[in-house]
Length: 337
Image 1 (cartoon, helix red, strand yellow):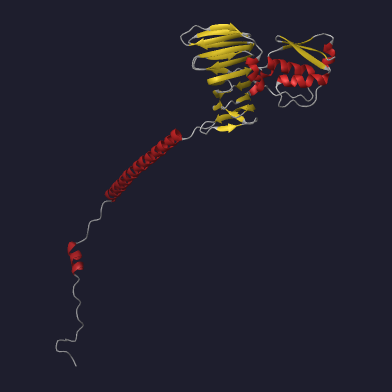
Image 2 (image 1 turned 60 degrees about the horizontal axis):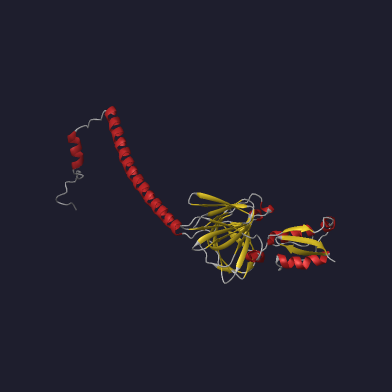
């Protein structure tokens, strides 16, 4: 059956409106190749410019951020350095003797009480003898430094000691070589040249006693020299005072308590006598020159640990068939009878 509207022919397709528009528009012109190339180049250039600007912006902010971070780290580092605890200095001396106990404080550390020998002392250490104590330490080259009771001193370096109060005794013996220790006080400084001397300071004055050699005292642009057997007093608002002193006797007894240890085993008798005499401020000699050959052949044995030089003398000489007597500052050695 056929539909009344069906003509029996295939249905015609509807026209495409877009296609009709393209057809009506006609053939589009083709761009000139040169113009097309310039357009592409311009577009590429603009793209590069925009990318470069963005990169610069990013780099600027990156660098700014890095600079801010570095500044913050630097400030933090400086703050840490400012608040970092002081670092103790290098070891420059050895504690050789202590009677009682001595307080020693290194940079950035609390004071600690030390009652035995052997401890290493650092540059910058502060030493204080308390409760009737005394102490002695040895610097490179064998230079001996001894602290009397009630002494406070700062060992700034191997060549500089600041004495705040009390007294120090310096023994720069033959074994100390060219070692020189400068003692600084609120009144002035004291330098030595191969000697034994004492420096004592309190609120009123600086007192120097020279046992051997010489020292130079400097204060307020002036300089005074003192030799063995001389004492010098510097007080504020007064001219210096010089006076003669004894180089042995009770006033030096505190020094003998801290005498440099002497190894008796294997030592010769003359070496022992030289040690005793130096520590006591004596000059020793034979009562008879013929005794020299015999004494020089004597080799000693044993130990004198814990004895003062005077006690050691009394203990050792009888074992050698010798005796001694004092004549002022002379120690005269003779054969025992």
